[in-house]
Image 1 (cartoon, rainbow, N blue to C red):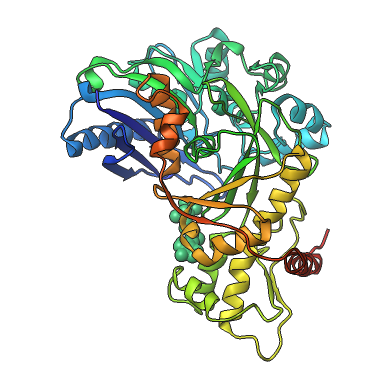
Image 2: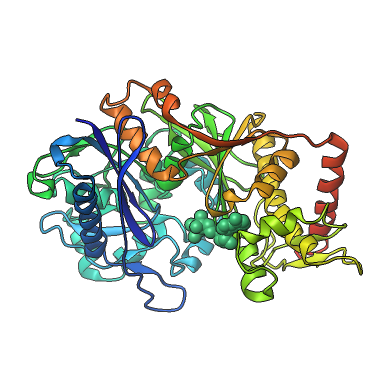
Length: 493
Ligand code: ADP
């Protein structure tokens, strides 16, 4: 068997990639599926649609690769996290649409947890901050939406799962009801210190324990696909939430290694090894994929506006034609001429936590032109990333040794170089930017012995470019203090 099948069940599309032993991509198939917006702020998806789309991309990838199920050693799954599905264990029918992680319908319920004094308890048990984002309030909402649903759940007829559980259930012909540690850690129902569903939290949210999936290591045997799915059973040997899969796919297997995805926003995860680090700066503590299949820990933080600042320059100001052009313009000037851009379009997250802050461009003088402003926008992406890295360093006491980058804006060489300088870290940009899919493949491939271990994978993980810091300490602190002054001027709370 020469290949690993990696499935990425994303928020807007499903993707299947087939990797060979040297990590070459043999085939890719991707298809979008429908997003449903029943009311302002509500986001749903049809679980049937998720499954049909997944089946299509997997079969299509097999056809494109010109191979059969018998050629696949195992399957790995990465998925959008927190999205909540409830279905009938006997008929396999979902009771309603999936409530997507972005859905804000339970915002007031989450707020009640905060005002009710649950924050500290939830943080210690789950590593999370009460928010509608996570699965628990969504699941409670489903159970309370209909008396019949509530009764069936109580009788043990209904089961819950995030998207990984749902597709594992479908792939195994409705036989396996399981999730992995990383996905469990995003439900706000899983005790990340005791590695089990938390009875106390289940009671708090009124959720029968019988609904909960078995929690398994991210790398290991979940079950095998039913024969009719691909013509021959294939073992499912890996599953993880998308961000954790990307951390693993970026080969950040050691404590202190961090990955950042520069997309619309930025997603930073730091491997903290076998130690859960509880943040003083409002970051999340989450479960990561340990090197031997066992659960490890990570700190997670996000930058609300990263590549979106570049989109804004393109679409609203019209001072660049394409996102890629930002690199050339930033390099056309020597510095920002004292200009700072704070892209607080939707407030500021860690470490400032100011929802009312709004964006600003500061330090304007007559000589500031579009090159300076574009450069200031790219620098702002790096400054915000550094702010989170600094919280991670303080919280964990671990010095950051490596920042692996991916996402659309990671292609920008100016940004990568500036990040390396401002954070004083070595930046690694891999040749294969499909790090989520890669992570799922690593989990599945090491789980089934396709690769002997992580050392073998590292031989195949190819680096596109490395950026090493060359800025003086005084210049770094001058720029950072200018940034912090600029941020101070937009804070409201
Ligand atoms: P998402 O998955 O969040 O949609 P992507 O990883 O596809 O995001 O990245 C898209 C974002 O990256 C956009 O906000 C875009 O402005 C930004 N981007 C893409 N290419 C570049 C570039 N060369 N330089 C700076 N920003 C870029």
